[in-house]
Length: 330
Image (tube, rainbow, N blue to C red; front, side):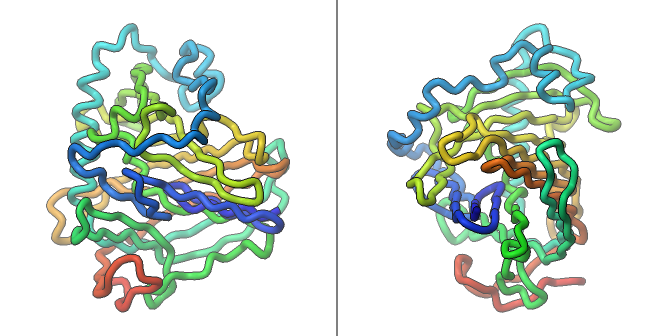
C-alpha cells in the first residue's frame, strides 16, 4: 500500500499505492501551496468528478446534540438559538483571516513530528520521532500572491520526507488552513453558527462549515491507479469572541471515498500568537497539529509541534527545488 497526498493537509502513506493531492485555487494547481483568489475573478468550471458529492450530507446539518456525540470537542458547547450572529462573525473572522495572508512573511520554524501506525481501536503499533526546519514562503511578486509550505534541511534545501519506506505516513501544510474563512471564499462554503464554547481561558464562537460541491472554486485532487478523485472538506472553527481570531480548527472529509479505501481524514490544529521581528502584529501560526486517517484498513496518526518561528530570507524565485539561504536564527 502506497498513498501520497500533498496539499494544505498532506498525507503520504507507504508501500503499494502513490496518491497525490493538490489544492487547486482559481484553476491553478499549486501543489503544497495556496494562492489568493484574484479580486472579482470568475469561478472555474466545476469538473464532473465533484458529482460524487451530490448526496453528501455535511455534519453541520445534524442536530447539535447528535453533532456533539460525533465530535467530543464540542462537549461543553452552549448551543445557539438562531443564526443572527453568523454574518457578523464571518465578516470579522474574514477580516482577521485576510490580515494574516496580507501580513505573513517568509518564515522558518522547528518542527517535531511523531509518526504512528495504530490499530483500528487507536492503540499504537509502531512509532517514531523526526525533526525538521519547516518553511512558510510568500511570493508577492505574483498576482495574486502565492504561499507555499515545505520541509527543509539545515541548509534551507527541500528535505527528503522520512518514514515512507518504514511504513509511516507523512503530513504537512497547516499554516494556510484559514483559507476557508477568507472573504473571497465565503461563497464556496455553507456556514452554521453552532454556539459558544470556552477554549482554554477564551470564550469562542463555534462555526461549522462545509464546501459546496456545486459552488467551490478550489478543491483537492487524488490521483492513483484508480484515476483521479476530487476531495472537499468540512470542518469546525473556534473563533475568539473579542478578536475574531481563529484559535482552533478541525477539518474532515466532506464524504468518505470508499472507492479508494479512504474512510476518514481528520486534521486538528491549535494556533498560537507569534511575535516576529519587523512584523507589526503577532501572526497566528500552528502550534500543535494532529492528523488521523483511515486508509484501506490501516489507521495512521501524525502529531506535529512547532516552535522557534523566525524570519527566513529567500534570494531565489519560489517554486525552485531549493533555496540559497539558511534560516535566520537570530
